[in-house]
Image (cartoon, rainbow, N blue to C red; front, side, top):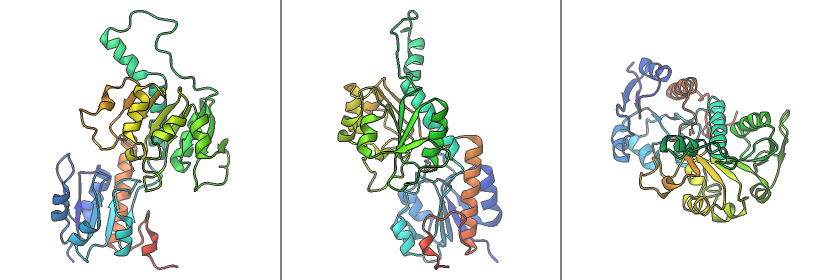
Length: 327
Ligand code: GLV
């Protein structure tokens, strides 16, 4: 029996790559940068499976270019906003993702950005290197207090709750807004609040919602205008949830204190982006899940979804289970 043909859109960590290479005839995109949309269309022709990254737009045209034998799309990410799920479901194609394993690493990064932005870590490091540090000063480089402050979590799924557990250790009061979570979480002292109240009352706001039509530009000029002038905003979810022009204006005019972004719109952020002028914004290059164990496990999960789909088995983690007949 010939091995199933698959296209893997980047070199993924060894645990996943070895699994895929062992049982598939794998075409692995060798470059550090993603294939262009045209290159994806060309490489998917005739494949049985596709293992893709969040940098790849997988739409109906890609699915159709692959052909009717395509059995599975496995995303090496928990977020699947890069994939047209409706188109996949309409074609009976299961789509896999990698939930759970990146919860802790992402929550760690959210805390790191809250601290970095709130306590001016990057601006402070710049002071040291640029000669701005003249002496210890009673009012020099003051930042936000964490103990006793209110943290508002926009989205209270796995990652939002992991951030809440960490923030509790800092003595923060936790509130959250999530239309899909109604029950208070056992063991977590966190209060559900409306969006308006969260925006107005939070000292820190951290975003943990998926990107979809309801959350695109959820943080726009109007939302930013409701925040405290001392507020710190952090986004480790998806760039387009925040209207970046509005964020630029709010930070530049000091209408909020600071922000930390792991994700931007677009990615990578162009070097001439005005955001890069701001000293009250910390930006890192979408690395919240970039820890050794997390990325190794993500690659394993992505490979296992791919291989299950190729065998016609149910994916261990499927985001569109409607493709399976009701049991
Ligand atoms: C990372 O952003 C992911 O969705 O896995």
